[in-house]
Image 1 (cartoon, one colour):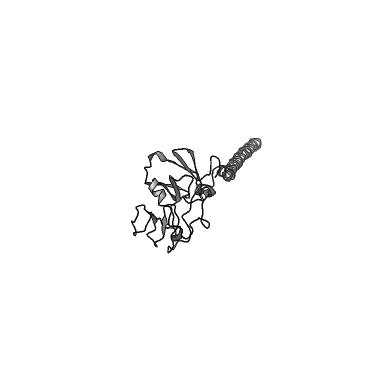
Image 2 (cartoon, rainbow, N blue to C red; image 1 turned 120 degrees about the vertical axis):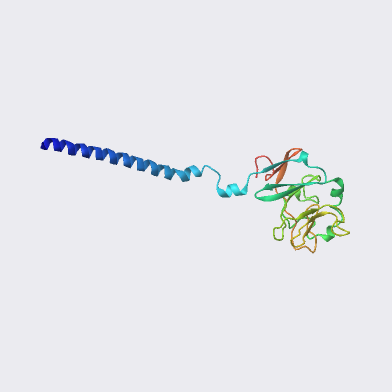
Length: 202
């Protein structure tokens, strides 16, 4: 009888060891899975990288002359204006009325540091955020729309900053610098990529 009881005790001990072994292995597997989560997450873009945003692409063939389209890049509105020859002509002739006519204190890539502030006279690409306090300037492209000598451009309704058809700020505006020009390029004549200077660069 005693021998039978001893065998039963050994069986209980064996079953208990198997249970504990399985529990330990399972706990270890769960722990390993949780430990792996930060490494798996690191394979995906960080929140900061997602916030910075990838380059944005726009089809320019659908934008009529004299019109403006708005797209988003890095959570900012990007104004793209297809200027008419008349609009390009109206960029000149009022440098004396501007705070930074040569864009020396303003933000733009080197290829946009010219009177048109663009790679080509036809298309103007701007960050559509007023450089005063971050409001969104409105398009006022018609000559004389704001006052008789107004050459056309942008007007910020928040505090009255005025910018010409190249995004240059007028004297008397609260904004101190011109509207910013983001990096951009044309992979094809009718395609605009905002957020990179050329393919493969940012």
